[in-house]
Image 1 (cartoon, rainbow, N blue to C red):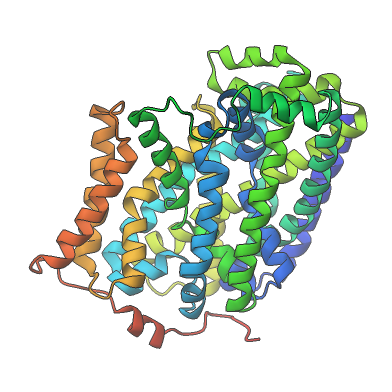
Image 2: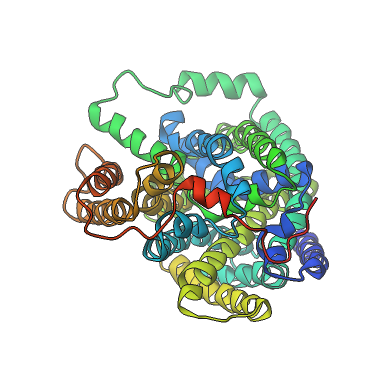
Amino acid sequence: MLIGFVALYVALTITIGLLAARRVKNTTDYLVAGRSLPLYMNVATVFATWFGAETVLSVSATFAKDGLHGIPGDPFGASICLVLAALLFARLFYRMNLLTIGDFYKQRYGKKVEVLTSFSIVFSYLGWTSAQMTALGLVIHALSGGAIEFNQAILAGAAVVLVYTVFGGMWSVAFTDLFQTVVILIGLTLVGVLVGDLAGGVDKVVGQAIAEGKLVMFPADMNAAAWWAMAGAFFAFAFGSIPQQDVFQRMTSAKDERTAVRGTLIGAGVYFCFAFVPIYIAYAALVADPTLGGLFAADDARAIQRILPDLVLGKMPLWAQVMFFGALLSAILSTASGALLAPTALFAENVLRPFVHHMSDRQMLLTLRIVLVTFTAAALVFAVNSTSTMYEMVQNAYNVTLTGAFVPLIAGAYWKRANTQGALFSIVLGVGTWLVASQIAADAMVPPNLVGFFASIIGMLMGTLAPTIIRGQGHSIEAALAHSKPLPGHRSH
């Protein structure tokens, strides 16, 4: 019966996505929904894309195990990312009429930086997308009672997302996000009430969390290494997730720049507040059934993510199971679709297209769909071979952009002297230092991602202020704004 309801829900989601695909007439429609989303849809896309599998299953389980000091990256760093993106970049990106975030690097620094940063961002999406594929596999595996092997379940889930994303692009993402946001908000709220009652009520759950120190963000016995570790996790999300195509797409899909700013800020607020609902549910589940704590000792780190699915399947009535898995699938599908579309856009537009001349808009649409299928296959390979939790996979993904894309972005937007040489030094020194530190000093007091981040800053300063060896190829931010043109097929409002 439960599987039947879930199958019906998936079929409805695919139908909505395919109907939305009828709006796609050109690449602007496919990548940024024609820049026409009203505020309520813009908020829904920001929230639903950010509220993914790692929030429901992994962040919540990590809190149940380690408390607030175990999750500085998400929801705290993730919410700060959206606030900073809205305040620092939303208006700028919208006014520049960019199709992808890679276009910013192209206009500001030239072709070499465009390709390098875009490739880094695309590569970072392997971890982010794989986390969503892993979650889909976990849900299908759990619903089948183990009859469907985990890796086979991952393949099945990926096929569902691929079907409607490959045809409808951002229009399909936007309409399915709106539908899925409603399911998430209603479903998890009802499940939260039920699980809280099983655990003895809100007072008991919160009281036990306080007694066990779960609500202490900075424990008194924290040493310097612990502080640095928290900073590394926070910066990975707060800064590393800003130069991401999915954040860019949501802001620039809005109907105007005011909506872009407001929609991202409101989406950030809704995300931060509602992220604590699955956190509460997971800890309440542990209070209601302490035996679930045995999952923390499993050899496979992914096992702790089964806390909520195991409790719901074992102790909840059918209606609660339907609501929980409906909300969970909504969270996963909405994030997964965006996680597939974003790197597809970047690779096709900013890695492949600079080397392919005279591509028509129709040929570009076909190329986008081919790249999307190819990237899905790559993410699947990554997902079936990883034993990390989704929270770890996402954090590792953002380390790539923290060390290789954030500093050139912020400098390009707000430092007039930033140039091509500085950007190249920043990328090479940042990513290179991070990779070396990860291999030879992974357990050092200062995390490798922060070492790479500091090296990226130094690279930007050195490259920009040193005598010019690499000729500048980009334009000043003022010139880029002055010469911005409407996107192909863009409908004015």
